[in-house]
Image 1 (cartoon, helix red, strand yellow):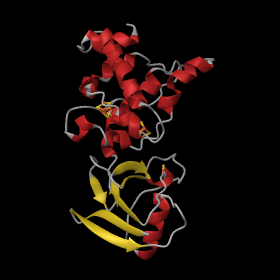
Image 2 (spheres, protein in one colour):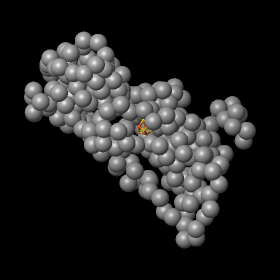
Image 3 (tube, protein in one colour):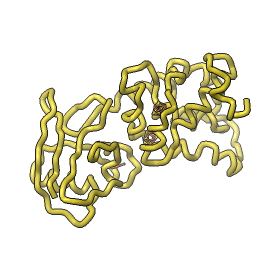
Image 4 (cartoon, rainbow, N blue to C red):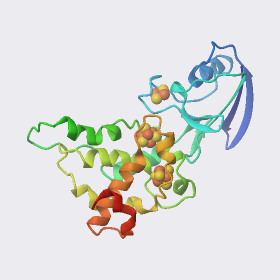
Length: 232
Ligand code: SF4
Ligand code: SF4
Ligand code: FES
């Protein structure tokens, strides 16, 4: 298989090509590991090989994917760093913006003192959002972020929703006042994030629900027709 790699080195991008022997329909990660046997200087991230750690996002033939759960077929593949994140080296990009936004918005669980028994229906409300592995792909395909708009983005919003809606979190709705800096109203509801999320987390749905809650409480102005379907 011919492997074309767009790599960031010494401040600019270069295209490198390799020929590798692979099994039929290898994963992108297996292809990269084959290339690394030829060129040990190649840098890419992959910590789990099981769609859990969220570190291996790349562009495969122009589409944002996890390298470990994407298979390639045919004679040729193009692998590039993701869009919209600061490149560090080769295929490795910075995730620091997401982590900084998490620190700024206290995106961690603050448990209640008492024990709660949760009904499956309560857990089901947030289970999709809890599946987020912070791979950043939703941010990489988000038009307002790519255009540089002041918007927190779908990745962190998904994390915030999973905690804010969980009755075991002691801060609960108090968190709403703290997330105004995310400017959720800058989401254009294009659903790119829903389409490309490798874990099916549906980020746009949680943005819409949080936006609705903020509008309902008067924190942001939103046209009522945007939220009519929520029944507020
Ligand atoms: S919502 Fe999906 S695409 Fe976005 S960071 Fe989480 S797992 Fe990745
Ligand atoms: S739906 Fe909103 S958050 Fe998702 S990609 Fe589009 S603009 Fe970004
Ligand atoms: S290597 Fe962990 S998600 Fe791909």
